[in-house]
Length: 234
Image 1 (cartoon, one colour):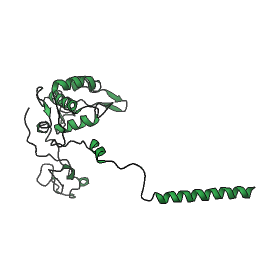
Image 2 (cartoon, one colour):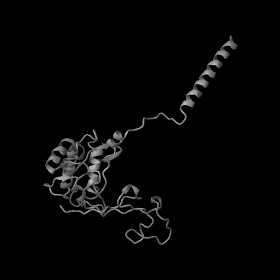
Image 3 (cartoon, helix red, strand yellow):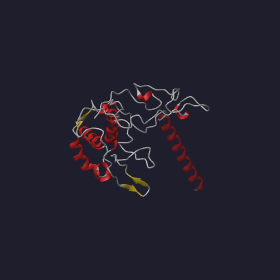
């Protein structure tokens, strides 16, 4: 009886092994983890907006519409008029304030990072809102709603007037207060030439020497650089 059980078990194990081998042979080079994405599906996700306004969609929005939308969908987390923010949990601080208050600065003893003090390009604000907001249902806003919220927040920060209608043609031309507050980081991990002695400082002639910069295609640059934009005032 014992020998019979051993024979049956051995036979079943052999058949299982042969079956797995055959299956493995069929799957050579095939991981079967996902299906190939179509161009149409890719287009739905390829919505990144560049600093110079590239890829901004058609549409528009104004302060009045943006305020109504903000009060309904944003104020609960970000506070009235963008000056506040709930505490998410015991391990993280409160949601960042969106609107600059008098005296807010990045160079004070208590730096305040918000749209009015920190953000470098207006189109990137549109990009972030469209992709990530509102928190509970990201990507649910229409294009006009995103433009309206962008106009509202820029106006509340005193960057544009409250009667300005924001659209794809003028958003990139809005000059942000901190547009010149960023530098191209040329440390070793950004593919720069290694320097250990008498290294140039930020702002000096050879500071970005060795850094690959393409002002037309930002994806080909080693770091985000300021594109050539003809900024307009308020």
